[in-house]
Length: 150
Image 1: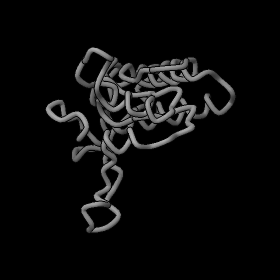
Image 2: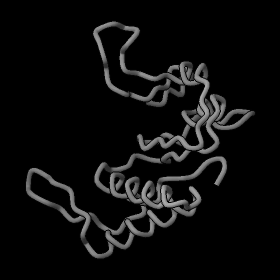
Image 3: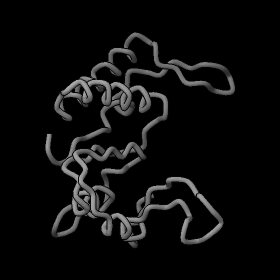
């Protein structure tokens, strides 16, 4: 959740592990800044993970603290994304990336694969009225970006 009024209180909801306020399941931007990572890649498939306020030294959101903590690359979203297409896209991305592809090339290939599936009408979501085919719409596949090392 992005908090433009208090950027350091923006957080990723990971899941509450106890009733203790210290273990509320939120990984805040302030906590991310304190991490020391040796990460080639961080993927933020949460909605709008690549956004934030524009400041004199960049975008103040969820991506910058991961770079500060030691990530080389962050993949994030620029708008709200749906679960089913995101699941397909991220699974395809990881398959391609683990086969030795560059992160940016793997993401592009995964986006094109999802676009092809949308065009064929094979991506559906379950609703109260039954399955609904998702349309060929850039909102469903184009919101993911690679920031940092390609």
